[in-house]
Length: 221
Image (tube, rainbow, N blue to C red; front, side, top):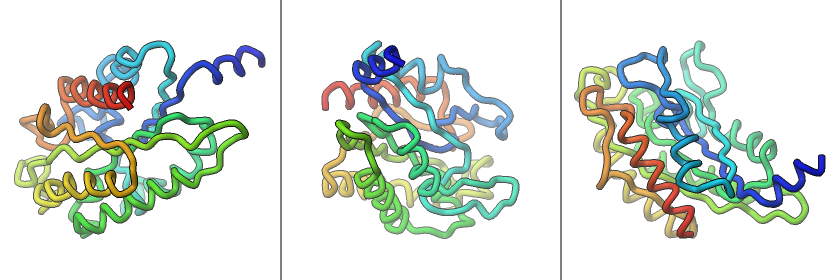
């Protein structure tokens, strides 16, 4: 028990919360392949931040901000419901990184960029008011702008109609939301992109670049 107390006291704890793009879904794999830890977030972020940080991975394919997925084979995709549990499960936390963009833009949900941003605000509010243990502080929040999908690509065509324009609008809407709520913001679009053949999910290089940006934001905050 003493070892656990010392561990918590010394290491900064980073909760990473997101969807299939951060879960590490391999492009074109249809949920059947996942990048290992050396490619997706854990090792990249850990190596950049060093041993003074503890990374907590909480991703799920098809996760949304606040909605249930209408497909019965995909239960418990409501991000808000799950996040409230995870915040209490993993407290104390120093940072919460929220990366939710892709699923909310799907055609079946018919949400505008403004509506999605409003639901992101609900998640930010939830984090700010989450219960914490004695002696802990509320975590710093990092929201990540969407990497733009190509909605007329073959893979995206059936699910992501109009998503390209939504995501372009969400980049600056998320930036404005971060400024208003005094939270940290990362926009990876100037330095990386989604896979250039599938056009929805991240390839290996995009994972490296994206998590390098998140690490830089944490270390300079």
